[in-house]
Length: 400
Image (cartoon, rainbow, N blue to C red; front, side):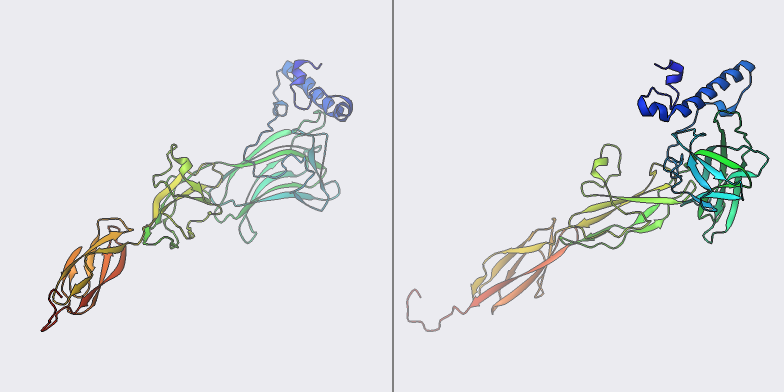
């Protein structure tokens, strides 16, 4: 069993068979570092390269940062000068090498979606055999026309010789200038090698403080309705960086998410713009736009809530005698159905408004009634009063 101090060093857990052989070199490198650490402590000297390795990088914008997948996602010039291998790995089992022994060489990875004002931090482990050469790792900002706007760089001046495979830990911080479209993590060497590992690019979160406003409420008297697009009246504000959007909808509440009703709101897939065009709805539905700055986890910006309200169209039902004799009258009464009361009624034939009307037509007559509910939804219906000619002059039949 390994001593506790060694068993807890990354890469030095007890292994058997081929694994033990495969990582024996790594064991020797770590053992060398520990030996150096003991010597340095004994001499009272501090060395950053001997500190605990920083292998955690939440929300890393760089792909394949520790080169476990060869140099996939990275580009280089000349081709083939940027490779992966072992010997100077700080995290995982591999590191990368930029070979400039025959000519100057470069490597890079492009990160899109970076906007003006966004704060970036780049950390990495690096070193070289000949620090006097010009060896750099840098953040370089470009506009949409691929022109360089700004370069923030670190000179790689850590000599790896005699360090037992250790690399120096470097940090670059920068703020994206106006006009930034993307940033590149780049390396440059004009001789010998750059050894590099665990490239970590993160952006600090400067989130929105206001979600802006959207418009507008809509309503329809129908069982199905295709609403107009929901527009952005004012944009989210506060913070820095590009804004990301996410829309929510609910058919059971119009109260903003408050922790207790979050499950009543649903995320709308692919709703990532400032405006949203809802599909047809078959019930009252409420919408909310959420926003955040790039690099932030939470959608802190919440807009106002807009509602698409569907109301059923009302219609009238009639009561009263609809067959009368000539010269008689009848009272017709309308009631509202299918809408939301109270209702109002408007009659044709000059009868005016009201739910009941007494009529005495001399001929068969049809009356039209328009009903309006409390939501302003309207419907119409008709009732016909049939008039029979009941009078018989000089009738000889008794009790006719």
